[in-house]
Figure 1: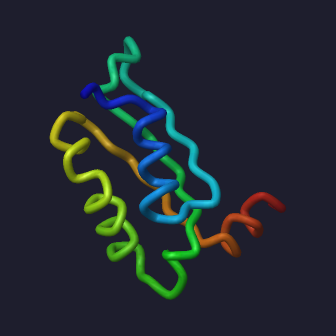
Figure 2: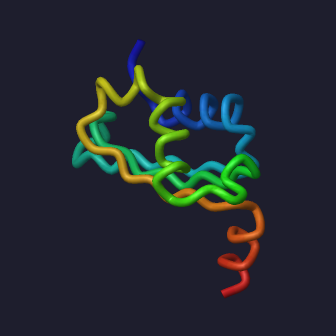
Length: 86
């Protein structure tokens, strides 16, 4: 199964209870080799950045085998609200 932005989005929403997910295919020709994601989840509450990224990497373990580059930003809902107000 090919890795797509929609597949990544749906998996993060279902497995990490994400309340907001943005996935951008950043490959030069949109060939699904490079993605940039923003994930907002209450599961990130009280967790340091490395632990948040490990949660995401575990969730997408199979997909990451097929992706060349993966950039992630992980926020709690409170952090997301503060960022939106800036």
